[in-house]
Structures are given as C-alpha cells and as structure tokens.
Length: 243
Image 1 (tube, helix red, strand yellow):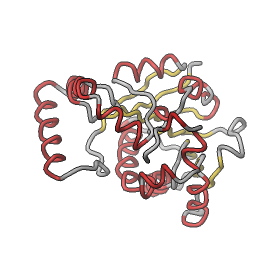
Image 2 (cartoon, one colour):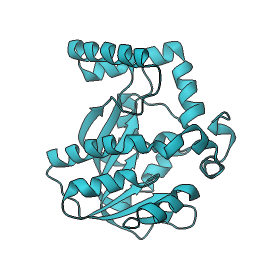
Image 3 (cartoon, one colour):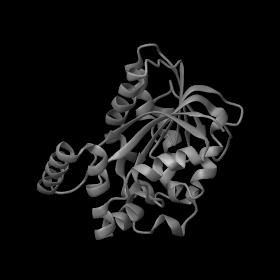
Image 4 (spheres, helix red, strand yellow):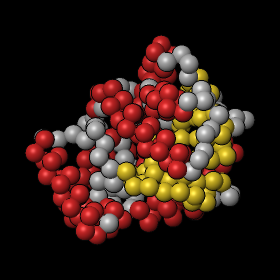
C-alpha cells in the first residue's frame, strides 16, 4: 500500500483494494497465533463465552480458530467493513454470521465476549469508537500494538512504515494504551504482553537478531521495560465497561 491511510477515508482504504494489495491474505497468517493468545487469557480467567463477536474480523479466521478451541460451540459473529472480507467469510466460513459495518449497526446486539484486536490504531476517533462499544458485551478483549518505544521514536522509520503499510494512524505505549481504555470508560480486568507474531516480515537474519535482542532484554529487565525500550510487543487486555 503506497498511499498513506490518512489521505483516504477509512472505508475507502479497505474497499479500494489498496490494503489487500499490501497485506496479502488479510493477516490470516496471524489468526491462529492471536486466537491462542485470546484463548489462554480466557482460560486464565476461567471464562467460557457462549457468544463471541469480533469487530474488524477480517476473513473471520480468528473467530474460526477460537470457536474450535472453545469446545462449547459458541455462536460467532464478525463485524467487518471490507466487502472483500465479508464475501470471503460467506463463501468459506458460513458458520460465522458476518455483518457489514457500513451496511448495518450493532446497536441492538449483545454478546458474552467482544474482540477488538488490532483495530483501535486504525480508527480516526478511537476514543469515540471505543465508547460506542459499551453496550455490546459483558467482557471485551482488546489487542493493541505498542508501536511507541525508545528505538522506534529514535529511528522514526518504523512508525512511518506502519502507517503506510498496515494503516496505523495512532501509536501507543503500554501506559497510553491502558490510559486510553480507562478514558473510554473501561475497567482493566487482566492484561498480558504478546510478541513473536509469525507474520513478522523481514530477512531471517534480521528477524533472528531482533528476537534475540528482545528475548535477552526481557530476561534482564522484564517485558514492560523491554517494550518501552525496543518495542515489538502488543498489549492484550481483558476489560469490562464502567461507562
């Protein structure tokens, strides 16, 4: 994707073909990895949802994997702005109810669990967006990339690259991600750091060097400080509405 997302409306970005051109498969390679992290967090909390929705569900792969892991056959609903992804889900994953965001609203829906995974950093009014979700579920799980770190600010190119290639228009640290959730009216229930997505792109030597440095730093000073210094982490947060 060569045109920075800020130059286009959100719906245009994901329906023009530009996002798909730059992100082949719509991050399906990440889906199982994300589903395992969500499932582990739910297991730690002893939560077994009977109904799950995913806002910005892409091709529905995370919902598909999470449904298989859950063991209780939860109902699965995906909300998605991309017409391409809506069509893909209807063709390949008919067990998932898919709702086009630009053609419908979720105002009258209610679920046990709502997933908001790698979405808020793409939304212009992200606080307004998060506040609009309060009615939707009893429990929410957010996954927010922690793009802000000492090395990304010092180099600057990782931030501009994430803007132009994967559409990040907001950048968070651990502290600002948690503060944003609280500002939007959510209570933090449980958190975890994630790292090591299989969709990391780059030469194998670079990937190995980065992962080795991050692993060593994490062992020495812990995940929170490693995230602040080197980046490469995301925040997985289970929250409940208090707004």
